Amino acid sequence: MPGDPDARRIPNFVDGADVGAQDGRWAEKRSPVDGRVLCELARSGAADVEEAVAAARRSQPAWATRTPVERGEILRRAVELLIRDGDELVAAVCAETGKPPRDARGELKAAVEMGYFVAGEGRRLYGHTMPSAVPHKASMLVRSPIGVAGLIVAANTPLPNYAWKVFPALLCGNSAVLKPSEDTPWSAHLFAHLLHEAGVPAGALNVLQGLGPEAGSALVADPGVDLVSFTGSSQVGRTIQTVAGNRLAKVCLELGGKNPLVVCDDADLGVAVKAAALSAFSNAGQRCAAGSRIIAVEPVYEEFRERLVAVTAELRLGTDDDADLGPVVNERAVARILDAVEGALTRGAKLLAGGRRADGALADGYFVEPTVLDEVDPHDPISTTELFGPVTCLYRARDLDDAIRLCNDSPFGLTAAVHTNSVHRGLHFAERVQAGMVVVNGPTYGSEPHMPFGGFKQSGNGFREAGTEALDAFSDWKNVCLIHDPDRI
Ligand code: NAD
Image (cartoon, rainbow, N blue to C red; front, top):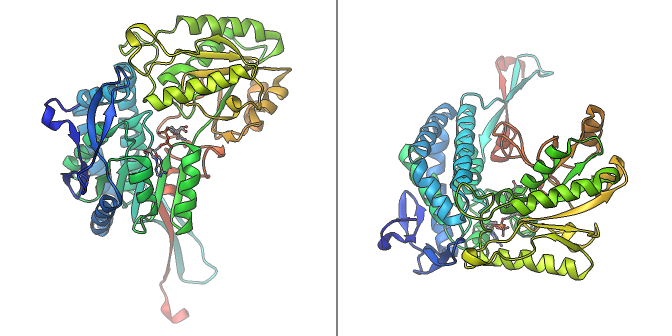
C-alpha cells in the first residue's frame, strides 16, 4: 500500500494521468488479514468509463500503426520493470489479498513469464497464406487489431490476471481499459504505471477502479468498447455476454470451475493426497482450477479419505511463508463459503475437517479453515456451485468410468485430474472427461504461459487465454488478396 496517508487513495489511470472519480466518490478496501480499512479506491461511474474509453479510442490508431515487433519490445521493457519493482508489487499483492509472500512471488514470476512469451509473439504474430483459384492472385490472412478492449478481472491472482489480458491485448494493437477487482486496486495501479514508464503511450492502457455493478457494468455497456474480455464468475459472465452481446461486441469469457480430481485404485496414494490437498487449498481455494470435487474409487476410498483428512488437519493458516494458505479476499466470501457449508450439512453432508472461520489471532481476518465434506449428494448445491474458497467434497465411485460420469455431471468443464499408474487409464480419462485442461498424476491446475487455458461448458465461451491461441481473442482475421497481374481480372 502507499506508505504515506495522503497516498492512501488509489485513483484511476486515464490518458497517462492519475484522476479520481468525477463525482469525487471513493470506495473502501479492507485488509483480508485483519479487516481494517487499507485504502480507498476511486469509485468510478459511467462518466469515468466514458472518459477512459474516449482516451483509449484516441490512442488506439497510433498504437496500432507501431509494428508488432516494436509493441513487443515495449512490452518486454515493461516486463523488465515488473522485475525491477518486484518487491513493491509483491508487497502490494500481499497487502491486498493477505496471501503469503511466497505465493505472491510465484505469481509475479507467472506474470513475468507471460509478458516475455507475449512480447516474443510480436516477432511472430503468424498468419497464413493460401493459394487462389485465380491465376496471379496471392492471398494472405493477417491478424488485425479489434479496437478498444475492456478487460475485467478477478482478484485471486492479480498480477497474472492483468498480464494474461493486458499483454496480448496491447501486443495485438488494441488499446485497453482495465477494470481490476475492487479488492486489488493498488497492484493494478502499479502495473499500469510500469507499462506506461516502459513506453506504452498515454491512453493505450487505462485503469478504471471501482465496483463491478457500477464501473464494470458501465464498461461492458459502453458502445466504444469493441471487445470485452472477462475473467470472473459464471454468474457475472452470463450478464456480460447478454449486455455486450446485445450490441454485438466480441465477448471472451474465462469463468468458474468445479474441478474434479479422480483417484484410481492403482494410484500412488501419497502423490494423490498431496495433489488433492494442493488443488483444494492452495491460494485458499481461490483458483478457477481449484479441485473442489475429489472422487476416489471404492477399493481405495477409505484409505484415501483418512490420509486426506490427516494432511488437511496439518495445514496452517497464516500470512507468512510458513503458512499453507492465507485468508479469502473479503467478508462476503467468508459468508458465502460458510453458508454453503452449513447448508450442505443440514442436507446430510458430513464434516471431516474445518467448516469454521479461524479464531484466535486470526479472528479479525477472513480466514476459513480448510474444509473437507463427505457423503455429499452429487446434485446438492455444494456439488454444483463454485465456492471459490478452501472447501472440497469427497465422492465415491465404483470404477474409473463411474468416476468419469461423476466428473462430467457438472455445469462446468474447466480442468480435471486423474491419478493412476496406468497410461491406458490416464488417456482413457483424458479422452472422455469434459474439461479444457486435463492433468494425469498432478493437481487440477498447472497451466503455463504457452499453454492455452480455458474451459468447456459454463466455464467459458470457447476462447482460450495464454498460448498463441490467446491472440484469437484479441485480434481479428483479415484476408488480404493481392492481384499482381491486373490485366487478368
Ligand atoms: P466476480 O465475477 O464477482 O468479479 C470479477 C470481476 O468482475 C471483478 O472485477 C468485478 O468487479 C467485476 N464485476 C462484478 N460484477 C460485474 C458486473 N455486473 N458487470 C461487470 N463487471 C462486474 O468474480 P470474483 O469473485 O471476483 O472472482 C472469482 C471468479 O473468477 C470465480 O468464478 C473464478 O472461477 C473466476 N476465475 C476464472 C478464471 C479463468 O481463467 N477461467 C481465472 C480466475 C478466476
